[in-house]
Amino acid sequence: MKQSLWLENVPTISAPSLKQSLQCDICIIGGGLNGIYNAYLLAKKGFDVVLIEALSEFSHGTTAFSTGKLTAQHSLIYSALTTEQGKLYYEANHSAIERALETNPPSFSRATSFLYTGTSLGKEQLAAEAECYKKIGIPYVATNVTELDLSAQLALGMKGEGQINPFFFAQHFVKLARQFGAEIYLNTRVTQIHSTKNYVTTEHGHDIQYKKLLLCTHYPIESLRRLYSVKLQVDRSYLTATKCTQLLQEQYISIDEQSRTMRTALINNIPYFIYGGRSHTAGTVTHTEPFYSTLRAELQNQFGLPAPKFSWSAQDIQTPDKIPYIGQLSPNDDSLYIATGFNKWGLSTALVAGEILSNLISKTPHPATELFSPSRSNFGSKLYFMIQTGGFVGKEFIKGHVTRANAPRCTHLGCKTRWNDADRTWDCPCHGSRYDEHGQVIEGPAVYPLDMKKLQHGQGEM
Image 1 (spheres, helix red, strand yellow):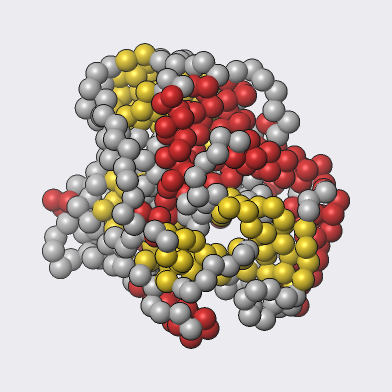
Image 2 (cartoon, helix red, strand yellow):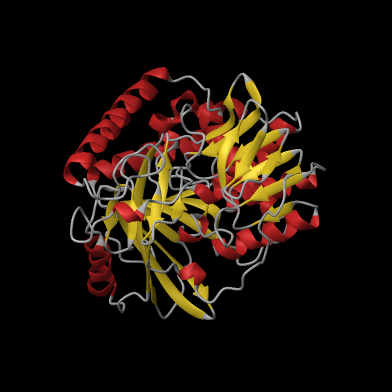
């Protein structure tokens, strides 16, 4: 697999694997920022918290493969919401970020976050978004002059946003969670959830009895309940990082069809230009190297920068209305919670998830609970999205078994995986599970490794 800039020569935090069965108030599955921040807030409130992560390191699933933008500016979300919803959405993200910053995390710096466009249609869309900012009370700037020559017809900036090294940011909250008494385990994969009896079982046969269970696994492994396997859509996008001579003051993302994202970062006292874009439904493309080569060529031709030292890809989960699902998985079960569907903005919304879920569990009101509830209404757009996604999943299931008969079968729901030659992974096109070249799970909802013995060399797709 290619390497993320954020994982260059980083120190690790060690943690044991679970060696015995145990009991706790709160069990959290997932060791990215989502799970880690929830563990910190809940342990701080006095709960007996156990967090388990399947991988051997924290934040190696999704967090360390992000852009590191910590912002409440999530593309054109505010013009898709009512003014009241927009106020709730902005305040939930803004206040969650500011409260997290009160703990003095490392690597944070302020920056104005810009959306920009080079088209007349995009200019109209950004003007409408700016009107929403004005009604909501979001500090902003609108301009066509930026520090980069972007040929922008309009750039809309949200003032006072932030940038982080997401790996160090997450590690900071691992340390805080432990200080407040959270037990944290690595190399501990859950393979079964016994939700009617309130316990989970790990791959080594140990049980964790809980009062509350939080699924913070990007794509929830309990995804069949209430049909979350067809309410969520999985996309993959691409990022690069190359050395540059100076740091940008702001951060940027295009809203145009060929969207691009840009920021800079100082890593080991070396400035890097982070540049990304291009996306497709996860698991649908075998030859992914052209996605990287396009970005590499643009870095060299448009910005005069050297070929990138780092290249990596990120997987993002989307809900029908672009608002994450944060809350009880089922309205009739207050023991099981999810936080997913962060729609490319998982750093800030992980912090929102921590605040909403810790408040729900401690029975403290949060103003945005209903906005983010997995059981919220908006049935029409949900149904349309589910029909589209469900139809795609059905097509991919059949197509895979016909055209890739010898490819390994995903251990989630049985779709045939597809070999990703650039990242050297087996990717499932149905629900986004990823496996390394040896068949070990990198990213769920799958929890079991691939059966690689059935792969015949030279047959199927690889």
